[in-house]
Image (cartoon, rainbow, N blue to C red; front, side, top):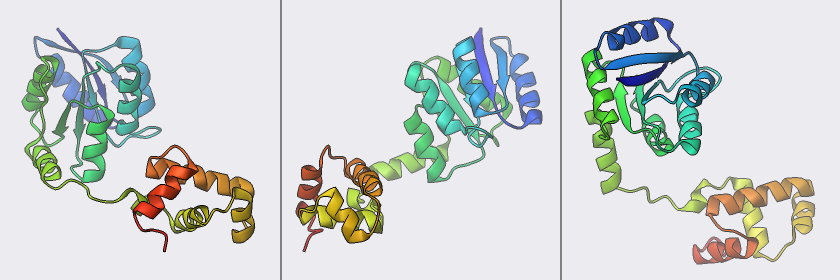
Length: 210
């Protein structure tokens, strides 16, 4: 018997899908969650074989819930069941640890088949999702890391490259020292470097300093 946890904020959807799944001889819906927080709690409480996860829910969305579950339980098998196919939902959900990705427009039998396949270790993706992944593989994101810096962070990076200390930067920009430290920490994170020196080297390497 495949034990399933179903998380969705629409009660009627939960009732309908759960009723169909429970009618299957090899599937049992052991718990239902109406938001992401309950989904996480129930996942650790019941340790289901499969988790059906909606993406848009109150208190905590399905992406965050998926991440929290897989961070502590990497073996969890999570199937996203959603109405959304945009990049801002698909990639983060898969990166968070979801194994399969289905649309709510899928037939109930298709969801049941996805549950069985995922339980057996296979990944089931909507054709549109597969197409997105293949396109991304053919055309990887070439955005440079520094393109994610805010204008203020770029300004501070240039001052760092000029050899200014945090205190000097604060005085130059008329902002609090604590604020400068927050910006510097953000800069290091976005540039994926561990210290100021590496950040400055990055700036010169990418010709951000003139």
